[in-house]
Image (cartoon, rainbow, N blue to C red):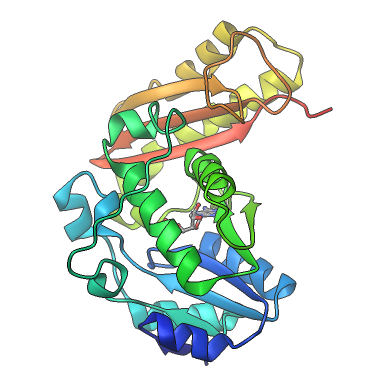
Length: 278
Ligand code: AMP
């Protein structure tokens, strides 16, 4: 059984001098989170799961209110994946009264998710800074599923010299390809079927790139075609440089296809690597 703690002093007391791996989450754990926990447990002396539904990264108040929460379940499954400690701070521990600091990562946060959800990455960067300084992990684990977030966190970590290293982990998918997300539970059975168009578009673009298609226009057309399904509202589909997140004019090594779409009122994102690394 994992120990559950709610403030920074208790985290520090529980960890002592141990080399810790941190997996920051908003709870509602699924197999994607568990893969991160398993990896952290394999690479560190102690594994800390943080569960904090961060109010400052939600753009829509309704999205925050509806966010699934079940700490008892999270603690049980996290422990079975190898977590020793669950850090579940209340809002006033992360943001004490008078909290006055926000962290802005310039440029990388302007487009894509940043454009659709103003303030989102300010909330992410601020809470990640607080969590990494609270836990002082040797390694922090983030999913490629939220690709822009991973790129933003890497820059934040480098520029503010935050503790430890950042480890990016591959996206875990359902059998039909849909990327696991805590939001998937809000999809109706019909919307869940519609949502499969998203990974299909990603894999169609990846296959085409693998067959040697280099034209971005053609790749986007292939992806768009897979996304033309009733009930799916496309927000963006792009091919971006994995470092700068800028749309690329031609396929470069490590380039990523990124997509966001709303299905049945639920906003979903996905991405795959397209360019072959040399
Ligand atoms: P969240 O609780 O949604 O904020 O996610 C917490 C961490 O888990 C983030 O680093 C996410 O990128 C990662 N994550 C979420 N879904 C997946 C997935 N399907 N595969 C891998 N990592 C994921």
